[in-house]
Amino acid sequence: YVVDDRGDPLAGVEVVPAGRLDIDGREHAVYFDSARSIIGRTGEDGLVSMPFFQSGDRATFLLKADGDDWRRYDVTVSDTGSFTTIRMIDASTEGENES
Image (cartoon, rainbow, N blue to C red; front, side, top):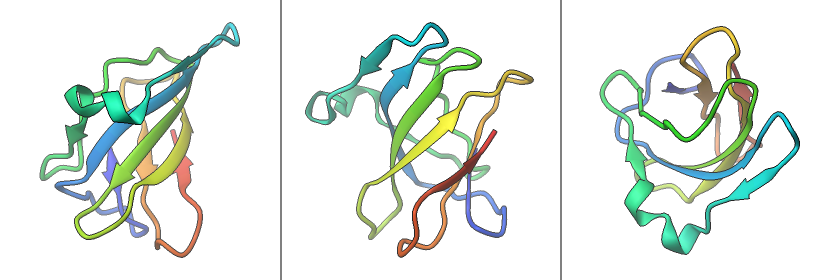
């Protein structure tokens, strides 16, 4: 899920999986220039499917809301469920994330 700083879902946000650190410590990268085919966009509920990660992975995403620049968010993929929340906060501050 992608939500704003109040916890409300954000629709139409572009999401790119940019990197993965698996639980064994191996790094996997996606080069931005070649990522066009895997860019997702959130629905009205703020949900976007990113089936490239496993529970416990450390994931890096690039997110872009309409009229905004790409911003980096690092999250740990949830061990308890199939959803991870990314909280997009004011552009003047760093990304804040939760599982």
